[in-house]
Each structure stands twice: as structure tokens, then as C-alpha cells.
Image (cartoon, rainbow over all chains, first blue to last red; front, side, top):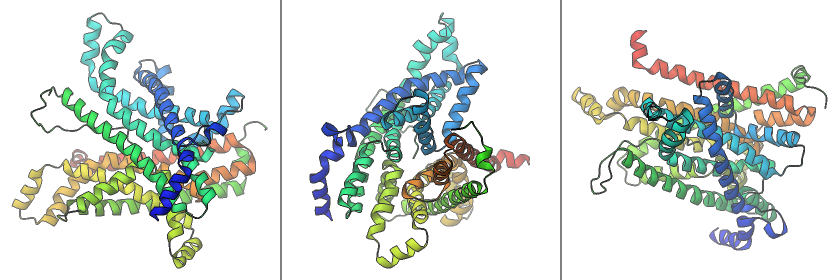
Length: 252
Length: 235
């Protein structure tokens, strides 16, 4: 069993790492990470806009975005992927690679989830910050830009990392529309070998575990540090038990 | 493609039949894996609280694996991997009894158990230790204190995350399409292939999922309201 696994790894590590890259599209683990990084980088500004729209006093802005967030949270990601697989080529009128389809879906999906985190972070700051900023002469947008968001986003860093982790896990769903990611590479390996599916998928699970576990670990360390700082404890010598704030955005 | 026409699908008895069967199987997978997950979650909780030395480590490893490996990969490992390692008599029995659905239930249930057990654990931890001492002072044993004093409060505290995770379990039941279980998404894809009315059938599928998720959320909200002592005192 173990020798099977080492043989598979030594034979197919390049395919699992970068797919058929020089001869074909980039794939494998590299593509999984690039896809996740791009989607979180694009979902982040989207989520701030969504959150601001949801907190806006204009109904025209608030209601559609609220509806969008609820629909996105109430429908399986798979269904959204099928939608963009159908709609994105229709709207752009071009033959869009599955990578772009998946990226669009993830940006909307994670944007909706992150917007709840951002909104929570802004609401948690309380009215006082906004009122104080306005008293000092900031406009609404200025207060958001210079006072509210810097604090809210700083407190959100752990949630952003855990959203990144769940994005990595969500990219596996690209398998349904043949996005050339790690899962796709593993199933290609499986199709070539045919006899050792358990070993192949075990390797796949272990790789995902290693990545997601280390990122979750980083998120927890940062979260502890931020909780400490928010409680005004910069003295590292004194161990004080703090109520940990739960990472809200975690989804399976 | 002709214009938008929902009735082309909804007035065709075959398609309606497929959709209803899809909804039924989605609920079979959801309820099956929910029950499995809850049972396992309580078992994991007991192991965690037991004095057995490696119990804690074992549960932590279980939770860590199921939270850090994508659910889809877990399902694939079950259906494409572990399925092939089973003895022949079991494999043939499973094939006769709808193996895809069984593996979807097992895979999703085991995965969700990790989330449920963590929710319950944090709920129980938020009950102050004084409650246990007070219950003991009133003559309760450990188990009866757990049953009548700690658990009711702990589970009540754990309700909001439990409801959230139940909804995501419902949504995750759509992943079963990858291993070929005949649930709602599968029915949607099949009708799309037969009718070529992609927009209409996706819309129907989306509305069904959204409606059912909202029903589960609503049921959960009602349950938390019922469990709230303030509300019960008023009623």
C-alpha cells in the first residue's frame, strides 16, 4: 500500500503539481492555489462594496444586494457553478475557459459570504466611531475610508484567511465543469492507473489536508494575537484567558 | 432556443416526476446524513469527555481531517476509493441497494459529524461549571446532571451554529451528483439534457433549493425561539 503510494507520487508528481503545463493548460495544485488566490483577491473588494450597499440608507442599493446575498447563501455552490457555466459564455458571447467561469462563481459566492463578515465587523464597531469621525469633519465615505474600515478589516484578518481556506476547498467543485485543478489532475491519474483509486484519492486528501490545516493554523495564531490586542493586552508575560471570537465565515 | 417558457417543463409529467424524485432523494440524503452526523457527534462528544487517554486526541484528529479536506474529496475517497477495498459480498449488496446514495449519506454524515460535534462542544463549554456543581449539590448524579441540567442549556447555546451547519449540509447534498446519486441537481441536469431549456430548469432548481433552505432556516429559527426560556415563560 505504502509502496504503491510512493510509486504514484514519484510517477505523477509533476502532473499533480502543475498539470500538463508546458504542453497544455496550467493545472494541478498550482492552478488550485492560483484560482483560490485570484478569487479571494477579487472577492475582497466585492465584499466591501456589498457590505457598504447593505448598510446603505438607500433602499435601491440595499434591497437588491440583500436579495443577492440571501440567494447566494441559500443555493448550493454547485447550482451557482452550473448557472455561470451557462450564463457567462452567453453574456460575454465568447468561448470562456472553465477557469474563468469558476473564478466568476467563486468571486460572487465568496463575496456574498465575506460581505456578511465585513458587515458584522462594521456593525460591531458601534455608532460611536462614525459619529466621532463625522464630528471631526469627515464625510460618510471619508469616515468609512479612514476610520471604520481600517479597524473593521484589521479585526477581520482571521476570517479572511478562513474564507481563503474554504475557497481552496470550494475550488474542488470545479471538477464538475472540468477546471484543470488538483482534483481534476488526481482523477486523470486515476483514469490512467485504473487499479489504485484508493491510493490516488488518499494522496489527494492528504495534500488538501496539509494546505488547509496549515492555513487554519496561521489563522488561529493571528486571531489569538488580534484578540489579545483588542483586549488591550500587549504584555506577553501575563497569560490571560480570553473569550475567543468565533470565526464566522467557516463553511464546510 | 425559443422564448422563456416555464410551462414547457412544469406541464410535462415526466419532468415533474423527475423533479419530485430528485427532491425526495435530496431529502433522503439530507435526513440520512443529518441523523448519522448527529448520532456520531454525540458519540464523539462522549469520547471527548471520557477519561480515556487517547479519546481527546482521536476526536481532535477526526474533526481536523473532516474540516480540512474538501467534502467533495471525502466523497470521492469514499465512492471511488474505499468502495473498491470492501469485500465482494458487501460490494454486491451495496450495488443492489443504491450504492451512490448510501455513500453520499455516509460521506456527508461523517463529514458533518465533525462540525456538529464542535458546535455541541462549544455550546456545552459555555455552560458555567457552577451549574454542574449546583446540580450535584441538589442530589443529581453525573449522568442525570448532564441529562437534566447541562445538556438542555448546552444544546440551546449550540442551536444557531447547528442550524447554520444543517443548512450547509442540505446544500452539500448537491455534491452527491459527482458520485452519481440521483438527487435534485442530478434531476436538473438530466432535464436540461432532455429539454434543452437550460434557463428554465436552472431557475426551477435554484428556486427549489432556495425555498427548501429557507424552510430549514425558518424551522431552525422557530426551534431556537421555542427553546428560549424567555419565550417559554411568556407562553
